[in-house]
Amino acid sequence: KKFPHSSQAKLSLQSWADVTNIHFVDAGQGDQGDLTFGNFSSSVGGAAFAFLPDVPDALKGQSWYLINSSYSANVNPANGNYGRQTLTHEIGHTLGLSHPGDYNAGEGDPTYADATYAEDTRAYSVMSY
Image 1 (tube, rainbow, N blue to C red):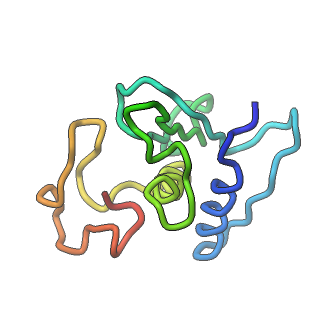
Image 2: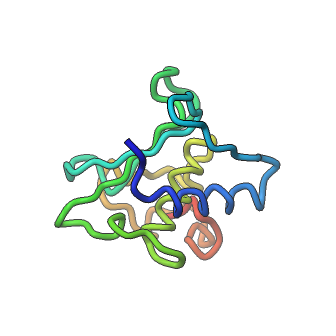
């Protein structure tokens, strides 16, 4: 089934291509892709998550986005909103990028107080919270 926000995902991929030496290509229907996108509706596990490349092959390249009635940010990602930022952030994880500090939303609600550096904000890095 096609990811419902593929146009925004493509824009997020282009954001990464603009600042890296990576070229993304659409896999044809039935072809295997190296990055996959999916939605989930259970609020267990945070608003989104993705797997870093150092996981078993079956999980590599996967990113998942919460869409349900209690969390609407990912329902309609668009340029400049938090849903689009989340797509770009989670794609960063699939490419091997971690957060700038030692924190993870899956372990609670991180705040800027958890940051090691004052610059650990979304103003400086899409990989910050």
